[in-house]
Structures are given as structure tokens and as C-alpha cells.
Length: 490
Image 1 (tube, rainbow, N blue to C red):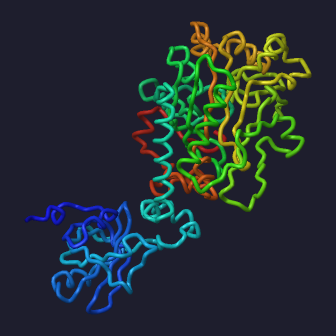
Image 2 (image 1 turned 135 degrees about the vertical axis):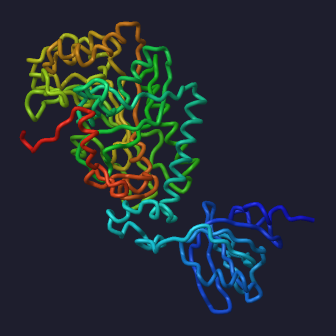
Image 3 (image 1 turned 90 degrees about the vertical axis):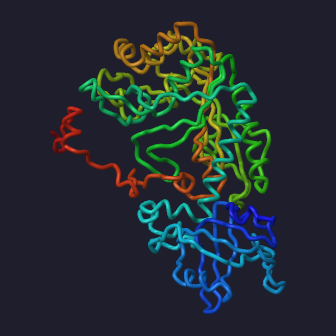
């Protein structure tokens, strides 16, 4: 009888089902130990590791095996044998079996890695790690982080789809508008002198989806902001973005809370949530008690598996702009003249009992910081992992916000005419939330920064050493785009 497993690739995790059979595995040489007559190998693929040995009875395999080195990619044919009882390693995957190697085929050789992937690569110079990120990602820790990230992505998709959410992709090339952070801009070849912006968030698109009658939307959105990086921030990052029509703060917070609880209990059962339901802390209380609006309320901060979620609510809509009058951020035209700015974003709505106060307010009022927004942040162990609000779904209310901030009407119409027309077209009440997905993953995986849970992150300076970006473009490309790079100050 022909053994089909002999000719078909078997994943290492499935070797237990083939004891006594000849099989073929494909993967990397993880470790090589040459003991003369015997050559031992640890092989790995995406499913795990197994030990193999070349015996003197396989001279052709022995010749090939003597040339092999770690990280070479190989195809191995061998027989799955039980290990001698004294050599069984019960605490290891496949610790009770061994592959008797009959033949090895080299699929690709490998240069000596720039660093040892079996060590904690967090100790390796980050520039080196990111330059050889494809090697760094082979280590167990990063493999776990990336695979767990994928599991959570899939769990969230299934959870929200079951609640009648529709996943919608929104554009990456969009318009530069004043939303609080610097845009990355992209020159247009076909419209010389004009630029797209990369999205800081899908905020305006998701609100227009509510105008479009989608009612329940989500996506894992790539967001780009040209701001200084830090451990929990990158030039590009991933948001879990949600928006719901006909929803109250309570509706949105309840869905968020349920989903976070399920992620932890189903995918991280070894972790403990400190308090359910999540406590709610008014902004004023948080500032008075913790001197911060993202408090770490863990009862034991030494426990890495303790998760202390809380909501921070009742944010002031406006705050004094410490930098003076508002500019418009990116395009430099028609900046606001008020000393007030928004605390989150200009699209938030007020609490219902503060709406009339907003509509009657003037930029000259001195108590605008007493207007309370329908905003809420979800905080975990001292990190803001999400924030949202019930929105201004009426154009007049949005115009009032910009008026208070001192923006000329023509500037608002120029930058946000699409939003204003959408709101005037018959837009239902709506609200939503966006999670900082990378931050959530960082905390769940007990990592020190979000670069450890992103497959191909940037450095702290916003550079990609692997791709050597940002980089110059050719003179021909510059001419085609109508661009000129001068000296600083020109």
C-alpha cells in the first residue's frame, strides 16, 4: 500500500498522527547539532517544532546534512519514530517522537542571521531588528503576537457581523481638512498643484455612511498622522472603527464593553478583568483624583495579567487653546480666531441637556468649558485604547462648533461642504467609537510598545530601515508631479 503522507507535505503539528509512517515535512532548520556519526536537527514550520536525526544508515542524507546550517529552508523525508523513554521531553511539542531522516533536499540556503532569533530580540538594536524584520518575525514571541492579532481581528469581525454591522472600506486618498493633527499629503499628477491627504481617521466617511443608510458600520482602518512618535504611537496605525445610527452613548458603550470582555475571556483566559461592568469616571473626577484623563486604576500594578478597564466620560466640549488662536492645521488658510478649541474633534455632539447651551454660545463667552460633550474614552491600564462620541448630526450644530472656534464661514464651507451637504440630506442621529487596535494588542501581549505587535512598523523617528523609507524620488518623478524641493526657508 502506498503511503500518501510520504509524498504530501505534513505540518509539524500533525506528526503525532503519523507515528511509524514515512512523511515529508518542509520548513526551516531551527537548530543543528553535529555529533559525528549522528546529526541532530530541530525543524520548524508555522505550526511548531520537531527533532530529527540522521543515522549512519542514511549515508546520502548524512552528506547533505553535514553542509546544512540554521535558517536554511529544506524538504525532509523521514520516518516518525517514538523516542527512547529516557529521551522523552513531555513538556515540549513532539517531545515523545523523533524524525529518522532518510533524505534532505535544500530548497534555499541562508546567510548567517544578523542576530539570534532565539534570544529576546527586544535587546537587539531596533534599527537592526527593523532592517531585518523578516528575520525578527521568525522568533516565537513575534510569531505569537502576529497570530494572536489575527485571531482577535477575526473574532471582532464575527462578533460585529452577528450584530448586523457591515464592514466597509473607506478611501485612503482623501482631502486635507483641519482635524487636529498634521496630514500626510500626496501630490496629484493629473491635477497639478493639488494634493490628496492620507486619512487621519475615517471620521467623515463613516458619518457619511450613516447619511447613506448603512446604519451599522465597522472596519479595521489604516490611519496616518504626521506627528511625533512614541511607544504607543506610529505614523500609521490601525483603528477598529465603528459607527451606529439611532444609537445612544449607552448603546455604543455596551457593545464595546461586551466585545472587550469576550476578547479577554475567550482569547486571553489567563488574564483577569479587575471590574465588570467597567467603572465610569467623570473627566473632572479623573483630573482631580489622578491628574490625568486616562487613569491606571489597577489595584496591583505588579500583576501583568490584570486588566483594569474604565470609561472616562463627561468631557468638556471646548478647552482653552494654549497655542493661541486656531489655525487650520494643514492648508494654512483662514485659521480660527478664537481662543477655544475642541477637546476631541469638531464632529462630536453635546450631551442632550447641553445642546441648547451650545447653540446659544459665542466665541467670546468665558464659560465654554462648561459645555459637556457626549464623548467617552475607554481606558486600559493607563492607556486610552479608544474614544468616541455621539455626533452632531445637524449641519447647524457643526457650523456652531466652528463658529465658536473662530473659523470664517467660507473656510468651513470650503473644507467641509461635503459634510454639511450630507448632514442636510437627511442624516439620522448617530455615534461611534474607534479603538487604538495596536495599543490594545500591546497591552494584551504584555509588550513595551506597539512596534512589537505590528508586522512592519516604523522606528521612533518614523523611518522604515528595511525599505529605506522615506527616500528621495527621481528627478523625472519630481518633474512629472510639478514638485521642487528647495532649501529650508525658501
